[in-house]
Image (cartoon, rainbow, N blue to C red):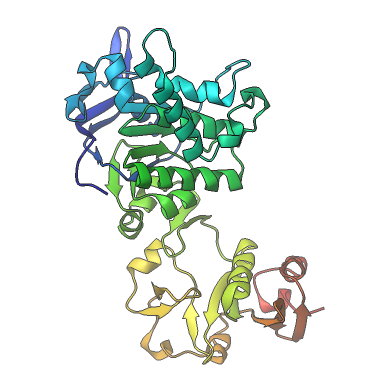
Length: 399
C-alpha cells in the first residue's frame, strides 16, 4: 500500500439543495483520503448518507461545500472523459442492457478511450479480456446478461469498471443482491484487485462481518453526520462501532465483533469444553436467552462474554475460546478464584453443559439440580431447555 493519496476531501459537506428552502445537510466537515492498493468499506446505519457520499465522490450530485481532489486535481474541474479515466462507479441500480453479452457490457468500460465511434482496437480488446480474467469471468464473455445470475452479472459490472483502468473504484453496495457465498467471493475479489492493481477501492456495504475481516480501513458514517476513519480493529476497540450503530435494544459486542439485542438473561449456564463444538454450544445457549460462563479445565470460571460496558470496567484478562485475550468482568476479591462449585453455591448458575467430542462427533451433557441428561445435537439440547422453561433450576429439571 502506497502513501500516495489518489482521492482526498477537505471540509466536505454532503446533502441536497432544495428550491426556495435551505439545503438538507446530511454530513459536514468531512476530511478523509484514499490511497492506492487499499480496500476501504463505508459503513453506517440506514439513512446516514452512505449513498449520498458515494454519489458526491463520483460527481453524480454536487457537494454542498468543501473540495474533493482526484489525483491532485479538483474534481469539479475534470472533464467527463478525464473523470472516467480516473474513476469508475458500480451502483446498486439494476441496469436493463437488453440482449448484450458479458464481453459487450464489460467493453463499455473502454468508452472513455474509444471516442464517439465506440470501436475497440486490439489494445482495448486485450484490456477487456484482462478485466474479465481478473474477475474470473472468462467463461461469461459470450453469455447474455439476461441469462446470468446476480453474482455473475456483478462480476461483469466490476469487469466493466476495471476496464476503465481507473485509479479509484467506487462501488455502492455491490453485494446487496447476492447470497452469502457470492458476497464472500465478491469481497475477496475486490480485496485482491486492490492489492494486485494498486487501485483504491471504496465500497459501501451492510455486510459488517465481511467488512471487518477484509477492509484495510473503515469509514463509519453515523446518523449525526460524524465520520470515523481507521483500521477495523482500532474502531472496534475505541468504541466507535458502539457509538455509530447504537440503537434502542441493540448493542455491539466488541469482544466478538457482532451485534446482539439487549435482553435480560433468563439464567446462567456454565459451559465445559473446548474447540468448535464448545464455541457453537455457547452460541446456541445464548441464542435462546442464557448467559454463558466458560469453565476452564482446572475448574475456574472465565466469566460470561462481555459487552463494551463491561469491558470498560475490566481489571485483568483471561483466555477465551479461541485463545485470544479478552477482559474479564470485575468481581469481588473474595470470589476471584471461584470454582464451578463456588459459582453454583452462590446460586449464580442453573446448571452445567459439558461438551465431549468422540470420533469428530460431539455430544452435550446437561447437569442440573435433580439429574443429568445427554444430547446428541444442540437442537435437542436447546429444544429441551425451551420446553422445560428458563430462569432457574426449578424450571430446568431433567425429565
